[in-house]
Image 1 (tube, one colour):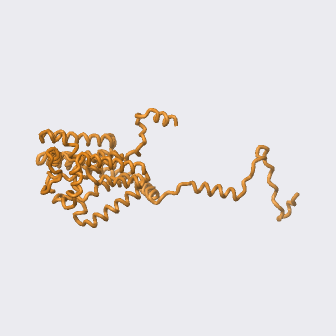
Image 2 (cartoon, one colour):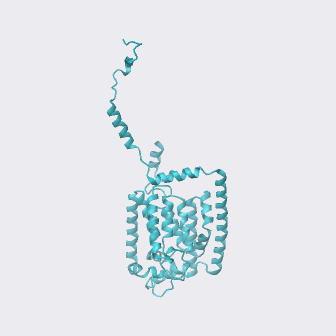
Image 3 (tube, rainbow, N blue to C red):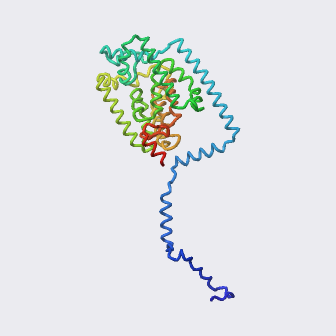
Length: 363
């Protein structure tokens, strides 16, 4: 027994273990440290991009409600102004040059029907009669081009309008953000719809964000292929290689259906056909600046790919990258409003596979 008056006496012995703990082994300190260190190694370490995104969210959450309300009013006012301006631009084109771009598609398909070159020399690139796209669209429109131009233009305009309605339904007609974006982009949308621009169906394909739809959009206008950077940044190699496969299939189909036009596309369409139009691309100011901005946009898209801003960055890059960038092409920015689902995965409302629905509900 220890002496209670001795200040150097040892502490009392620990109480004996309870009966149900008597057989338990006490882990040694090295073992405990190893287990803790192994557990710490399993914890995910946030990347710089994720940390920056979290910091931005914290900064926005710190904004007062009065400031948020004022910002919402400003955005709403700009959307109203943009919608009114879009109506004015649409009316101007309806009066001056309704369905103007339908001429280019009709004449291209008609040339194929007549056995003529798809990309003839001497066409003014500043007008509405030049065809600057890959052959696929002209090949698809060949049966429709057997009709008179008025009937062709009417049917094609119905396709354009139907694509825009499908785009709105996909983005969500009950979402406030959808209508704000439509208002803000009122001028490009009004212009694209009234001249029957193929950019509207392309914007819908871009919004779907699936490998097949991006490959098809890239065969209408080349720059949607830049969306592949988003898949690479997310390490979604399945979607990336599926995109390459779909793109190869579309190219092969064009080679089979229109060999001469497919070969002539790469030699006939280039930077010398930008024309004297209202081009808002930085390429007009400096080709070097344009290349630098495209590379920076690609790097930003790659860095943001795994964040909530990755899809918007990819859509902005694909929309703004063309060296011939006209106002109506900004319609493609609508695709940034909704990030597409991962290829091969089903949404919660998809009942096409009852077995998968049952497995998800059982979980």
